[in-house]
Length: 86
Image 1: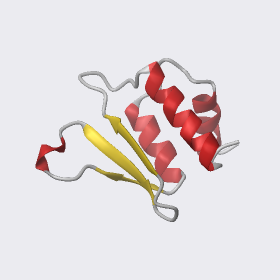
Image 2: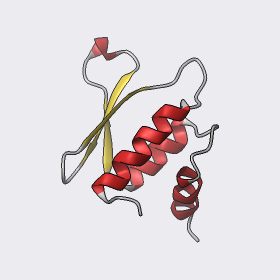
Image 3: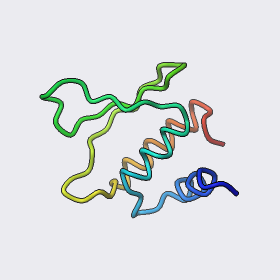
Image 4: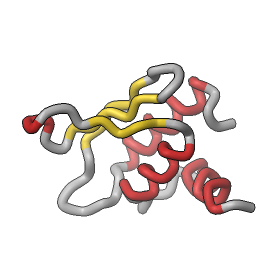
């Protein structure tokens, strides 16, 4: 099992300690590109799929790097709906 498959399996379990760095690796492997437009975007970030242009918007967690449970759940639901994970 590759690292990305292990990461997807961990994400599917909806852990309470999923980090933004792990999300960056996961979405990058699924062909999403990180976009935080402008100097004033602050912690807001959009992940845009390179082919379908599907957008996932969220705030980067701070000061800690751990995503909130609702963020993991919402991203999971969007990836399922788009068919990027089973």
